[in-house]
Every structure is written in C-alpha cells, then in structure tokens.
Length: 176
Image 1: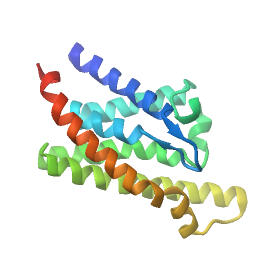
Image 2 (image 1 turned 180 degrees about the vertical axis):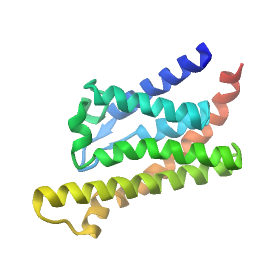
Image 3 (image 1 turned 135 degrees about the vertical axis):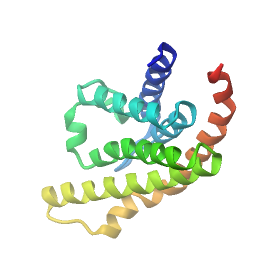
C-alpha cells in the first residue's frame, strides 16, 4: 500500500467519525455516516473504502467515541442498532463487489450504493428485531420498519446522490 493510499484511507475513516457526530437523535439516529461511506467508495474505490469502514468500526469497537452521540466500545455493537454499524461495512463490500464486476461508472455506483443500503437495512433491522425481542418480548416487523428504515430511505438516497456528485468532482484531484 502506498503512503498516499494509507493517508486517504485514514482520512476517510476520520471523516466517517465526524459524519457520525452530525446527528439528529432518534431510535436509529439520522447521521451522515452513509454519505461518508459512499464518498469513500467514490474516492478510494471499493477495496480501500471497505478498509476505511473497517478501521472506523475497529476504532469504535476499542472504545473511541466515533459513533453517533460520541459513543464507542463493544456495547455499541451489542445494542439494537449494532447491526446497522455492521451494515455500513456491508455497504462497502457490496459496492466493492459491484465495482469489481461492473466497473466504476456512475450508474453502477448509484445502483450498488442503493443495493448496499438495502443490505444494511436488512441486516440492521434483523439485528434490531432479534435483540429487541430478546430484551422486550417481541416486536412487530412493520413497527420496526417504520422506526428504523422507512424514514431513512429518502435521506440515504439523497446522501448517495450527493456522494456520487462530490466524488466525481474530487476524484480527479485526488488522482494527481
């Protein structure tokens, strides 16, 4: 790995932390993390973006306050929203796979980002339901979807679109 790639990967992991701190607190907080993840894929490519997300999650796992609400530690993963954190890594993996198979075009970027969001929502919601049910005795799927997924679809698609536009503008400068 070249020094430039290492630095860019670290910067993107740091950006994910900053974007996590920009939050509207709800059951599953509204943050800019998905924007940072999509931007990382757009600027670094899928492989380095997945590494950046992995570093970000490891920083949080060891206790640094990089998650929303300035939280961190393994407890963040053990809670009902921990599946969405893991889902962030899945977004990067989906986009990396699509990039490897189909290239780096804007249509591939947008569609793989949207599929990545669906994977993140699915994994995070399943995690939420399992842990919530274990702690509280039951949760209706539709109620969980209304709390944890439906309000986030349009904002996440807007963040994906913004990441596409920003990454297309900044990528040529980073390549130099």
